[in-house]
Image (cartoon, rainbow, N blue to C red; front, side, top):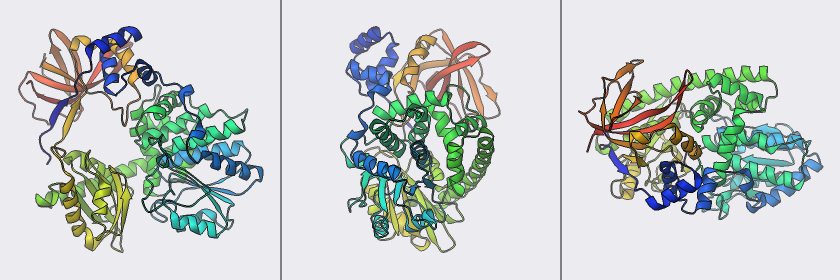
Length: 565
């Protein structure tokens, strides 16, 4: 188990500057303080963060490779060429192909979208995937979205067949070189926009197409909800232009024109005022479920659907697949926990590697994420097939690079790569123990200070007297929350309870707290079995707006409780 959680309070910014900006902008001081903590010292920067606008989006041609992609796409449109859109099976890939397909259709082209299956063709621009995407009619142009940057052999294969290739991607370029193609549009190849996911890249290309040759009947703003899906679900930083996509996209989601999203919102229980957590925990998982267990074709069909009845059938099917995925994930996690419990302390000291036959490769990433958070250790979970080949996903903690750990384990793995915080690996069953040893050794070498001590990062201390509806009005400007802009975590010190907590649904506790004569209610999810210390307490919590029977209150969601210090 990880070490005891350490509470770390972020230093407050200059109170004089906070007061100056709060007065000038008419906002609650604590909200201005939180925004300044995110690095926006100049008032102009602060306003751009709080009030993101579409007109602040940069010229799409400033993204390297866009100009060449636009020229080649218009050639395909003008010559009515056969075009294949080759995507990935996650939400970013599906969202990207949806927007690409929609705008090319608006220009009169009828592209053939293709999404590989996880089990048959695997991830990325594989030779088998390329062959299956073509059928009996090889295209003149293949556009790869959310994959392809490092697919050098596959790009050469396409070139041999006389097929042009455009790559729209955001994954890290390999030091060994990138794929040779007509245009590689990847923000990682330039100096700016590194935060974009592929849905954002495709938006840029679509914007460039429309700037070059406007379409009177195509409004790109109506696809911002699609872009927001990919951006939020792919957990890329919600900063700069991504923040614009997410804020404006969530607003567009409330009034979406897409039957598929209308149906998906309905089956997911998302009503008005969609939030980023609705994408992350309701819409995204249902779209991902199809690609995790089988093929993501149903998710693509849903987003492209123009008929609400058809969309409702597809949404119901995705909802059922998501239930199946949840059951499979629970079973895998329980079996993984059993393996972890049987590992020696040394075998799980700095990281965790577990694997087993029968684990579905579509859920190992989710399980790795949950285990990594639970133990606060970098983790790989590996599903092994009948031939003894394991395919796994890894998740890390801040300060530990999975890419470096994989590089240090090359002698015992078949393949591996990804990002510092998330990566994939292929390893033979007989080499799993050796991989664990090298992985743990690499992590141990990377450990500095208390990086493996779980930390609770408190954004601001606050008094109950400050928790007002006026604060909530200003607080809304910090949304949407996500990567690089997490929901603020507050701490209130010296809090007491005015009555025994109520148990709700046998799992949660509802409290009535008091501090300095001011009372507020709070709920602590999944806490009914916790051993709480004697009061008074320091409590860590997030806030939200709670509306019930016409009454609006500040809703406190407790994240942690400790004895007051």
